Length: 255
Image (cartoon, rainbow, N blue to C red; front, side):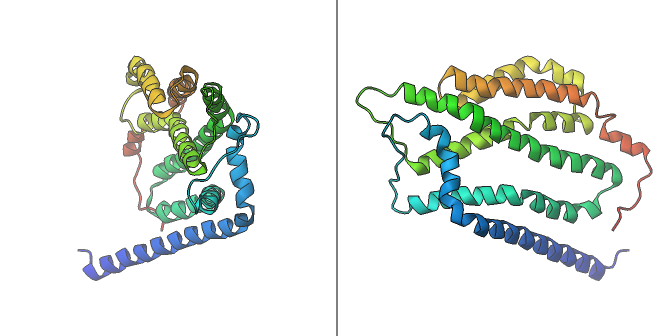
């Protein structure tokens, strides 16, 4: 039988290691934040550029909150610092869980982790460079006569973050499809039979998370559908499901 004392000591050692790696990750984000803080206003200007380009001549963004001129650029800089420090944060997470994984699990987890981050970043870039100019151009073009378009910077940040998350998650679709097939949860043939529902669902998601114009909705719905198709193609080349591991000789994970 396992000694309860050894079990408790092992549990405590894992908690201590988890705390250490969390602290390291937080310190890494703070260090990057401190390095970027002098450029906070410039970073926010980059984020606001898609809207500023379409504002009528003489229009500007406004801050209706007294602390908004400081807190909003700080939030944007913190987000940028986290993205820059993300590889190190993910390394800390990987270093914590890797010793407890079998080899076939490591072969799955690491590529999934890397590809998830890559697809999320691609989704954010797609939103910034493709969707924002179209959406903001639509809003600016439909401004009623006698109304001057002047957006609050805090509300603009909330809108941008929502769009980043929506498109980032949307671009995770191929990863989700591949993982489901690789783990044997569902087959490629079954996922193909879901195609009509996925197409309808994609446009429903587009209607919920994007501005109320057809172009912006399509810019989310169509990529979501195409990414689903990409996932189906990639799933054909990932090999047998994870259940193939049942045929392998399971050994104790390397410590």
